Each structure stands twice: as structure tokens, then as C-alpha cells.
Image 1 (cartoon, one colour):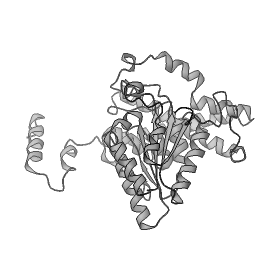
Image 2: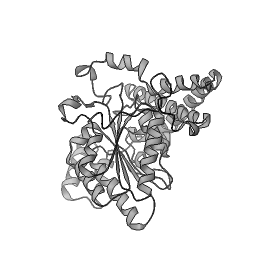
Image 3: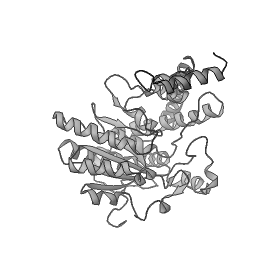
Length: 354
């Protein structure tokens, strides 16, 4: 199956051309835009981890190493399209329109962290595994019924493919020819479980065969491959040619969350080695140097301006008061039933507030 679903690249780990199909479209402007968004998201992610360690936000979910997968795919979406992220897809949602302040507020526990800018169809991050695939399929089908050309993209990890919602979402999208892109980021581990203990399938992309839909397997650390192949999938969806399952093979350097210790189940030397070989940002930097697009002053100025942007977002986030514990109880039902009110009262009493 790996021969039927090869891991497609446009540039390799050394920033060299592997597929020149899109050479004419890979301009210096596009390359620098992708690099800027990837560096911005990496600096944001590192800041998020530091804020958690300092006790300034709650548990945080890092994504460093997956920037190319998230940003390349998000860049392929258009105005009015729908995005359904997991709790880890901050790089995708910031690329699609979320502000950094909003993303930080989510991890501070503020409900405003789930609200996208006006006109942006970004669902709140899905914490239950794979539930968002059904939402994405439903939204895509609704757009089809309304006669628009809007598409959905939904993000999920390799562990989500073991859930029933994954199969239900793909089956429904296939039957109704829904304009949705199922974007899998295959990090090789579902928390502590390696992929070979989750499935006998050699690839995730091959699961598309069972649903008679397009299946694509990509080098998820090659931002060009992700961008152009996702764009193709979105264009197919818009033209009524149905859904696509994309498997982006990538690697996350850090823990599943800041409450996790990956050294207990994963050889961390692999992450050290990958920083020097398959890293998505380093790869793009090498490409830019090979193509005479790299400028040291531009890179230094960019790092400084992005750092200032992130620090300003942190300042805005910290100027907003911490969430009230009643938020946990007051935003589930239109009117709280007695068990919720009882729990709310008991919790307030335990804090000495009653």
C-alpha cells in the first residue's frame, strides 16, 4: 500500500526540488509568506509552553514540528470556507483568521477563546477525539444543499482514525459527495500508542479506498506539498467531485500536552535528530538559500517583529480577568437542570463562597 500511496514531496529535506510541477507558482512572495506564518506559529507555540510553565495559563497543547501541515493546508482554504480544528491546530486557525490574543484566551479558560472573528467559519477546538469529522461533513453537506461552492477542512490525528466517528464521517461524506477535506496529521503516536499498535494498515491514506474517495499521502513537513495538494483537494470539492482524505506524515517534537512526559513511551533522540533533518522551517530556509531568496537582515527583522507581536498578544490576554468558575456550569443548558445547579452550589460552598 505504501507504493500505491507514496509520500509526495515538492522539496526534500535539503530544500532541493523533487517535483517541479509547481515551480512557476512558487514565487519568492509565496515562499516568504509561508515562512513568516510558520515562524510566527512556532514562536507562538514556544511562548504558550513557557506561559504554562510559569502558571500564567492552564494546560497547553504544543504542536512544534507540525507547522507545515497546518499552515500549508489552511492557506489552501478560501473566504467563507469552514475549518474544524482539534485542540492542537492553533497554527491552522491563526492562519485562517484567529487572533493570537484569542488563542491565548482559550488556554486561559476564557470562553472568548472559542469565538472566531466576524465572517470566519472556525469551529471551537474539538477536545473529544474525531467528533469534529461529523460536524465538518454536516457543514459541507449543508453548503452543498444551499448551492454554494464552500468547502470544509477538518483536522485530526492518527489516533482519531480508530474512532467510529472517523468512519461515519467518511462514509457520509462519500455517500452524499460532500465538499470536505479530511486532513490527517500522522504524528506516529496517539498519545503513548504507536501507530503500528493502532492499525495494521500501512498508511492512513489507503482508508479512502473503502469509501471510494480520493486518498493522498504527503510529506507533512514539506509546506509546498501540503499547500498545493490540499488546494487541489479543495478545488475538487468545489467542483462537486467529492471529499478527499489527506494523510500528512509529520512529527511533533514535544509532549502530547504540557501534562505529559513523552520520554516514557518515545525515544526523544528521534526528535533531536529530526530537528536537523526533517524540520519544516529549516527545510524552507534551506530552499530559500538554494533559490537565493534568503536575506539575513530580513530574517532577523522578522524574528523581532513576530516576537513583539506575540508579546503584545500576551499583554492583551493578561489584561482580561481570569474566568469565573460559574462558566463551567452556566453555558451547557439554556436553563440549568437541578443536578447542575446542585453541583454549582456545592462547588461554591467548597470554596467558601456560600
